[in-house]
Image (cartoon, rainbow, N blue to C red; front, side, top):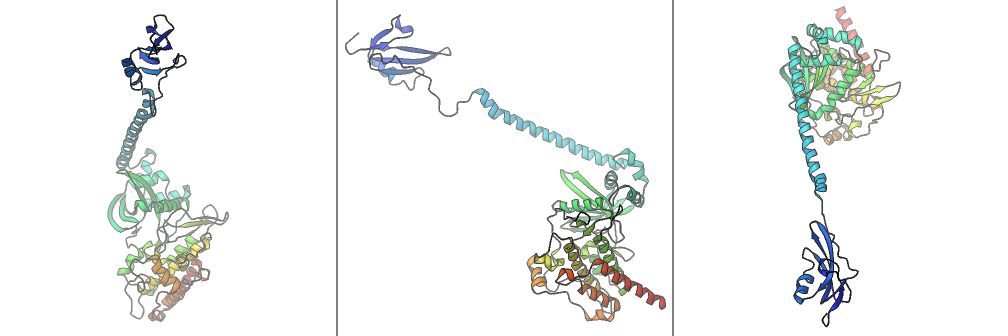
Length: 477
Ligand code: ADE
């Protein structure tokens, strides 16, 4: 050893069997050879070697720890440094990144295949139905050879609701050819359609009004609603077309259209006016009443009564349409079924308690009283188009003189709740006994206090009495 040299521990191939050596510095190193980690200890003799091996020890492949005291490398073991941050193995990388990507791609492919199959099935169903007149051989002969009246008469004894069995509804729906569009609005469209030579009405709901389709379908299919003054239900159908859902409601077709359309063009005499008013009151009274027993029905409130939702029949009577917002009440359980339609009634026809939000929404009577308010407005629309003293007015919607064509909720609230305005009563109406009675009735539909208003049954009875007395006068003449 030389002066100034330190004694170090020696372990490894360079020691020649000696356990100690002398050098400028001691070292303890770790190197990887053939995948194996090898520990060496020994002496660094030259100053150049110190510079290369000790100073660069942090950056070279074999890690070296140097020290300068006697036997200072005895208890020093160099270890592999822990790499900071991610040091993922291939397996980990596969699991974390590649696997989810594969799963995503596979699910995408699966969804596409599923949609293709579903679409193909729907198309196939429609094409097949059109060709064979059914989706089920069992019903083919029945549906194919029947008239709508036969089918509907038969279904009254078999199902619980007003319509045909569901498979037959679907079959009928898919055999319809659409002929002409007779109405269009925010709700969707109404078409005249043909089924086995008979005209039917097809209401195609806009997708934003799907809740109304569900509600109307639910009511017609669960409630036996056959009445001459309620629009006759035939079928409901949901189909997938171009990856969107089509919602159809198929009903009787009334070629004279809605009361609103009819009043634009036609004038009435007192007897026609009475006939219409009585028929609407009868339809409303039937909706409002609960009938008990197996052939019974719950009480129903319409919530969107207006001249556009009333259809004119060829016999001069009317029928009430559009049950998309209706509520049902079952007295035995005191259950109120308001559905889940976010839609509200037409603003122009809203009762004061709806506009000022004082309506008791948990009480079924409230909804019937809202219908009565709107019924009064429909009476007023009819009365304007009824000739008396040789005079008649143009058709106008209620409150045409105080609000714009598309009034806001606030506009209506000001007119109805704050100013408490009511439609104008015309003097000429008092020259006719029928119109005089109709004026009395409409006024009693418009009390600010909902509980003071007439009931549909009371209105129906009063108009029936008038009808009978007019008949009697005719007989006497
Ligand atoms: N407009 C709306 N519904 C109708 C129907 N059932 N018949 C004729 N026109 C209509």
